Image 1: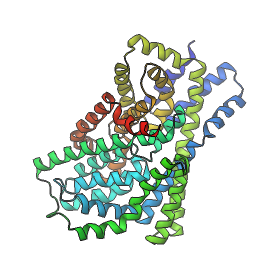
Image 2 (image 1 turned 60 degrees about the vertical axis):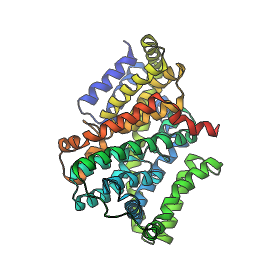
Image 3 (image 1 turned 45 degrees about the vertical axis):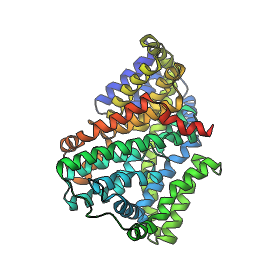
Image 4 (image 1 turned 180 degrees about the horizontal axis):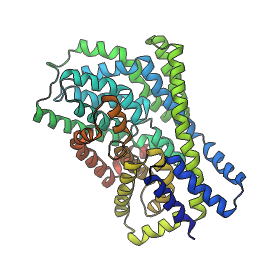
Length: 426
């Protein structure tokens, strides 16, 4: 029996039947281990080896950062500044939603943190201003895609740990694609605002008003500059940057904003443990699954299949887009990265695709998956937050898929969008 394909088939069947992802990974893995008589000590070694990863330390720490921001009042100040800055643009608070997500993404690094944090404020404000709730929720989900693309980024750090590519270069590569995504969404909102006559601020802010909204938000706005500057100067690695970010958020939350207390910190820590445990369990299970696929030479077989299709890097990249777009519709980005990247990346890179460019294409696809049915995680969170039905949210998302897919197409066709900044660092 070809156990490599068999393990993949069992995983797919269990997943389609609704078995939780962790068990869908573990069951075929354990069946393989039992049938091949592999010592359990080998299994534990592979799992521990996967978790003993310095880059992965950044994952729970950045999750902690996002939880702390919601407890310290930082999200409120970011939103007020974004409102003052962009509220007069056509679409008003809808444009503020996008700008606020870009600013918030420079600290949190996760789409769900964006939706659950500043997204709650944005949706309520847009509802009170007269925007349809489904539109507000859909835009919040679409703009949250920027979070895992702009540095810092939890999915990019996980991708770097899987592929052994420089996390710093991958993080810097996300800056221009994130700005491209923001620009596309702002154009889409502009068009929708003109068509539906959505409200906006009555006038542009005066310099004094801009300064008054900027000063309270300044410490939070300085966070991405602190992190990116520190990484570029070599003061700390991307993993160490997560710890620096925690210390900085604690300092400004306790000393500047004075809204962070021990009960809030304790609550944020507990939530971080719960979320991190779920992520790292998948990492451990996927490591064992990936090791089995490697033993059965599945990546090599996949490389041969890719080679039979085409040797053209652009054609292979379009296939990668299709694979990860579909994967993002069904499984979360962490699982998809851990399971698929070790299989897909080697033949594509061997064909001449830059691994950093490939990484951004993969992450962008998976982030679009967070707002794409049937299992878009951001859609489920938005549905629970607003009480809107999933079908209603999907209909409201329709105007935002074209700009997101256009940004993805441009990123795929023009590698310099993702490679320009990393090449400056080499």
